Image 1 (cartoon, rainbow, N blue to C red):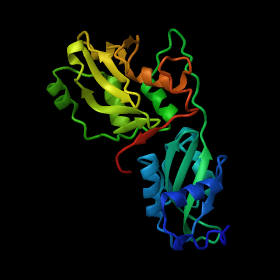
Image 2 (image 1 turned 180 degrees about the horizontal axis):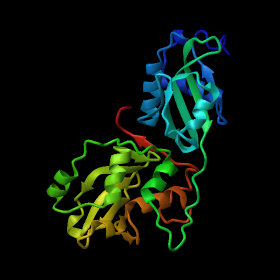
Image 3 (image 1 turned 120 degrees about the vertical axis):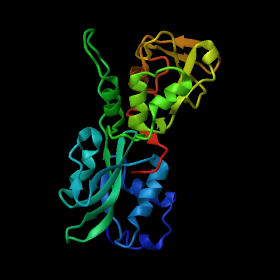
Length: 275
C-alpha cells in the first residue's frame, strides 16, 4: 500500500483524488496511511466541502469520552491508541474520517478511514412512553449534543417575531446549526414569516419546495402542530411537533413525506466550517 500511494503527495489534492481514495477503501470500509508530506488539513477541508462540518473524535491523542457506536467510534478501531487527531462525518450508511495517526513505526502520518454506520432504530413507541424526540433525532443522524449555534439569542428572535417558539425547534437549531438533514431538508435558523397571514410559521423546507410549518395557534408554542404546505399549495396537518416530525420522515417509509425511501441511514450536513 505504501508504494501505491508514494506519489500521491506529488498530485494535486482535489475532490477527484478524494473520490479515488474512497473508492479504493470500498463501501465496506477500511483505512489507509497516506504520505507524510501530504497536508492533512487540506484533506479535511475537501471532505468538509463535501460532507459539511465535522466532529472531532480525537485531539492531541485524547479521544472524546462521549464517542460511542452512534457517534463514530468504529473509525478509531483500526488505530487502537495511535490516533493523534481524527475528524469524522456521518454520511448515509458510512462514517468517514481523516486526520493523523502513528503507524507501526511510531511515525505520525495522515490517514483516511471509512466505517459502516448502523441503521437507526425503529420508531415504535408505546402509548405511555415519554420520548425525547430530539435525543432520538441526534442518535438517528449520528450527531453530538455540542451546540453548533451557541450564538443564537432566542429572546431577541422571539421579541422580533412577537411570539415564543417551540422548545424542540430551538434545541434543533442549537444542536445541528445551519444545514440540512440528508442534504435535503433545510433547517431555518429562525422561522420565516411568509405565510403568517395564513397562521403559519415556516421552520424548514425541502428541495421540492415543500414548506414545513407550525399552525401557530394558542399561547403554548410547545403544543403547536406541524403543517406541511406542499409545493402545490395544499396544507397537510400532523398531530405532533417538529422534532418528532423530522424523526418520522427520516425513518418511517410509510410517512407521506418520508425520506426513508431514498436513504437507509441519515445525517445532517452542516453548512458552517468545522469546529
